[in-house]
Amino acid sequence: MDFLTAMHHYTERPRYFCSFGGALSALEALPDTIPIMHSPPGCSASIAWGQSGGSGLNLGGYCGGLAVPGSNIGDRDVIFGGEDRLAEQIRSTVELMEGKLFVVITSCVTGMIGDDVGGIVDEFKSESPETDIVFADTGGFKGNSYLGYDIVMSAIAEQFVKKNGTKITNYVNVLGIVPFMDSFWRGNLRGIRNILESLGLTVNTFFTQNDSLEAIRVSSSAALNIVVSDVYGLETAKKYEEKFGVPYIVTGLPIGPSATAKFIRETSAALSLETGIEAVIEGETKRYYKFLEPMIDVYYDSDQQRYAVIIADVNYGVSLTRFLFDDLGWIPVYVQFVEILTGVQQKQLAEKLQGPNGIKPMVVFDTNASEANRYISQLYPRRETDLYTDSLSPAFVLGSSLERDLAQKLGAPHLSVSFPVANRAVINRGYTGFEGGLTLIEDLLSSAFAAR
Image: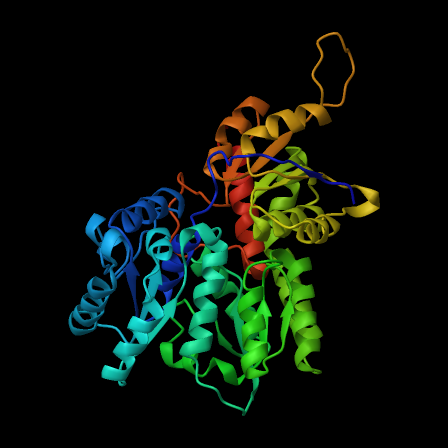
């Protein structure tokens, strides 16, 4: 499939934090876990306000946001080293904060000055062996927040998860949804859990109220790791395979009946589940369309088929395109991915976006989403001298809250799904599974009818 990669020397309005921010966001979501930042004081503030302004009004939690324990190093520590300050902070945090797992993460500054953070953590372990404490090297210059998620989750697998040679049949871990970077992470993980539990599986999703630190400790006993992303969570899955012998599959984020049926079949095949699978798919599909049936007449009579513009991260870029093609009957004409991706990753993602009857969107890999209007103008040139031209109408824009201006220029409705989501409050809403597909249709059509 053809796709376009733009080369820039800068990223305008990035749609993610640094790796330190992604690690911190993941730790704030883990049960009974206390992050300890070895960083200047400004790091937590930057991540906190980034979360509140981009994660559906969600911010931190217990020991999250502006309340994260940290060494708060200053100029003196940068010059002479901050190891003593970190050791002091670890001792006071363990004494004062109610947690069962403590994870020390590093920022750009502490990564550059060369503090032996791993040594400090190991020394504390020898002094206090009853305390579970992990170190993750998450300096922000390593990459974006999605990489930070993988770094810290891999560190937890390496240093905290208990090695257990006995595998528990039909026990699975779910990886690939990054808390706060996916504003709908709670609802999406709940939807995936519901799907897997309907197959008779025991599920560890790491971050929800249904999860526990003890389940994470024994997650090496899983029969399978399911990575619901084409990119995120892969390194963690590889760590589990390397250290614990847990195999993994890559399925993508399942939204709607087509993707969810595929997700169920791929998971079932990997676990050799032989009975009842097609009955689950058939029953849920019938239920899905039974809910949708009363809206069909209005949908067609009001001509709600749309051309779609999608500007999103890896998970949503693929899953939204497939849902619109396979289940809703819309035509995605333009898909832009906003992360920095390798050539191999770009090729793999582009190949997944082929529509029916040879239809394919223009696929762009460009971190600067403001360029979208220029690319779309190449697809649909607007010349006043042309009496008859293809036009991008009726259109719909799916992306982040930053795409609202683009939607206004195109005269199209708009829905914020991908980070940053600043114009919606998100509590437990999710788009995964059969149920999530219905929720997404509700949101799409509500946005389309909002001006009535």
